[in-house]
Amino acid sequence: SSSCSSSLGDFTWEASDWANEGTEEEQERERFHEERERQTEEYERMVAKREREERINGSSNSSDSNSREKSSSSHASEKEMKREQRRHEKLQQDLRNMDPLFEGIAFVPWLPENEAGKSRKLSVAKEVVPKLQKNGWNLKKESLKEVWRGQRDRAVLLEGLDGASAAAMHAILRHSEIAEKQLGPPVMNSADTFEWFD
View 1: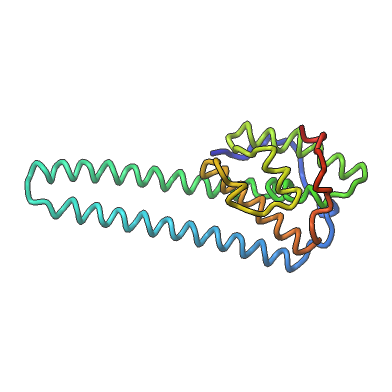
View 2: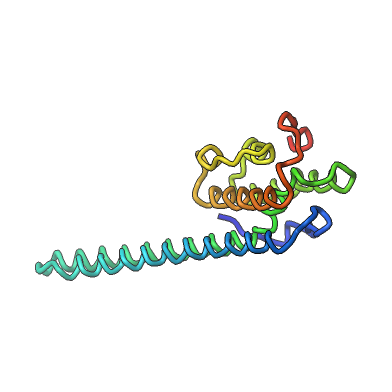
């Protein structure tokens, strides 16, 4: 759905932007990446199974014209599945490339209320989120505000999102959960109006 480009500028997150980044967080992040890999493998197994079923169904028909139709249909279906697999692989690559940005968005509630923290929040509002949206990630401002206020209900936050954007929101939620384990609940007031984000 999107790809990271140099148009994101030199926006970077530094370790000093949030405290206590440690081994537990690294383990959580590793588990998150392992889960994503597991889901990718599951998807690939499903595609392979579907291809096998198509071949079996295509070869079991004895009529020549039906076999040609099935073969043609099977060939088109194989092409479609390969195309779908390439899209899936590209999405996985995009998610890996964008993960530091998703992590930065997730950590917003734990940024200090000093000038550096305010500057980072403005960078998220004016640079990171708009660039992601421009590149096709459907990150709704209201949903991000809810995550920052502590909402973790995926059914609520992922409602109405396409697959790629739902995966992005899932990554943001996962980073928020890691931050919460490390740093405690978000420090933002639940009534925060987020004028800086509108």
